[in-house]
Image (tube, rainbow, N blue to C red):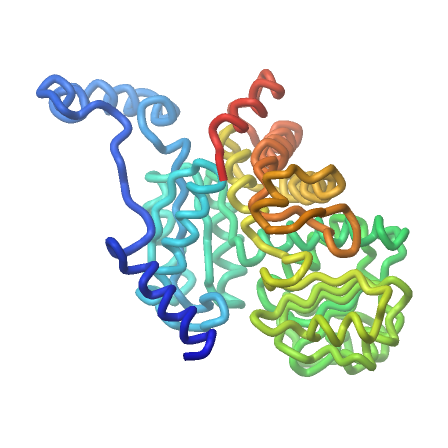
Length: 426
């Protein structure tokens, strides 16, 4: 039996034994006596309900809403599987809920919605929103995901984030920040080529602009080539990034570029293209499982490359688990009304700074290596780094306070960081 089939069998056993699924619900209060039950439900629960009816913010004191996130999908763009539908997306959404709990101590319910019409999907999510302190949208196909994400962020007063878009943007931005540091380059002068025009690509491009990259120095490419103002087949999202340069192909977009971001498909970036890029090129080839250019080909073509992929078996994995648990942790802990660009940028800068710090022995043991030092082979932190929670979440929370979206500011930041250290154990 080959390795792929062995992994599939192991995964199926993992999901089915000793009991199906990956998450469960456990009570947090005593429940073994008649008096316990009278407090938990009737008649005692009426006191909590009346308190919330009188003051809705009391729900954060008397219920678990302040630590509860919904992981919501319709299964139209699941991982590398595509449109497998809501039920088939459930294993993935359960996994996402497990990661929330494991890495950030956040309770999460997975909710799979059998609805592809954006308006109906939005209505459904808004109708169940009172249950939750935050909403993580997941695996919803473009272009519908843009409207769904934008509308829900605007129309709800709790943190909402489509992780495929904004989580990916945060991690790639962190990698870009450290790539620039290693290459000795500045954002304002970087030339960037982005291959892909879906949800993740657009969100990354937007956050790159917020980092200081100039729009005129960025070229977006789709399946037809360079996105330019001279094309008549562009939707509004692509027109936002249409270049005035007289180019037509990815090869032309990459020539002389300092950065290549691929959120597309395997093998579209050739060694010949790579050799036309500027010195110390920063290449993030995120197609999974096979990147836009293979690792060995990339390093052989450009020994000066700064290279990241979406794969866990290669250096510099762009993994969203570095972001979403801690972004929501920080947002929930200050009762933020939304997750804004200031909070996402704060997360990216915190991740970049953490990668420049000495790596604890526990992380080295977890990955079976003797040494990890900031550099071309270690550009962003590892997912099992226990410092992530007490580094990224406070940065996000502070940005929420400073940008005016926090409803419960933190008074003692040192105490908050220590609380996170004690509460969260990857």
